[in-house]
Image (cartoon, rainbow, N blue to C red; front, side, top):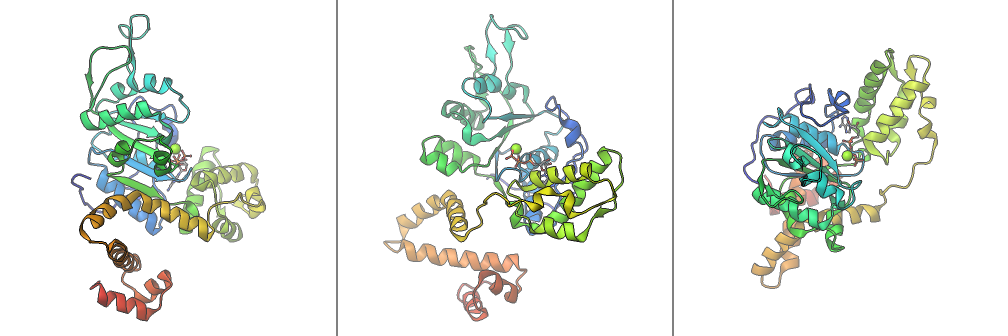
Length: 369
Ligand SMILES: Nc1ncnc2c1ncn2[C@@H]1O[C@H](COP(=O)(O)OP(=O)(O)OP(=O)(O)O)[C@@H](O)[C@H]1O
Ligand SMILES: [Mg+2]
């Protein structure tokens, strides 16, 4: 992406949303105090990303399973950007079939239609100076995708029925919980839009891969929902908290939030116990944590990045593409593991599942210090 500002990393308090402006949101009250809760390394990275990308005007793609916090992250980027005084407008592309989405986004100019002087300005026009959040972009029709690409490249569009071009200044943040690579393979998504969007992308890992966030999140939601119904709680008992941490949460943070909300309503005392969380007694629906699914998931992530690297290697490596790319991959992998473990070799070798001798050998071979 274009120039990235590296600034200090921020705490959840620092990216607190204190008020939402703009015409967007009936639900603005609910989002008044949104903040990114969690003390996992993953959440720390996401905070840094928000801090880096917020001041820029580039479009952003946010990817993650349902309920991982994509819309929350989009709002935080907006709240920490220079556009915070203008609108944040959200459109769900999945729920709006053709041609309603085009009408909603680009508006219409037609004497026969009501509105200001026969005009119904769309969200892109209303969002001038602000931010437009395109949720579930994988489901956007191809023709609309072309118009969004034009917005990203030229910041121009034509309302339906109009014979004039409007210039706008919107920042686009898009989100998806489906693979755009699959959508491209199935000819449902434009490659050029994909590359344009993913110049700056943020991946939100599922909650089961950052379990250390669960106690903080559960207590945060307990505080919020007990406050909402004017009650005081002492907390969540250790047994219940242990079970909440062990549960795989296929619906991610949203599912945890809903269950804490239900527990607050069910509990007549002051402490939440396991019986206040009926979901813990149920067999969770199957989620993709088997080794094959994990490999498949990682392969999908690589699919997103391998092409430019592969093309470059293919043009210069004279038939040794496999060797060169695997060596580069190995170096990057060891380097990432050492970084993740703060250069602690015992932890890094355990994490990678290789012996310390192998790790030492690679550190030397790849000059990793
Ligand atoms: N790290 C977090 N800290 C605090 N609240 C969170 C966090 N992550 C998610 N939430 C809360 O969980 C709920 C679901 O988050 P959000 O709507 O942003 O998810 P999503 O990824 O957009 O889901 P979907 O794909 O289903 O639209 C929201 O109430 C949000 O405020
Ligand atoms: Mg969402």
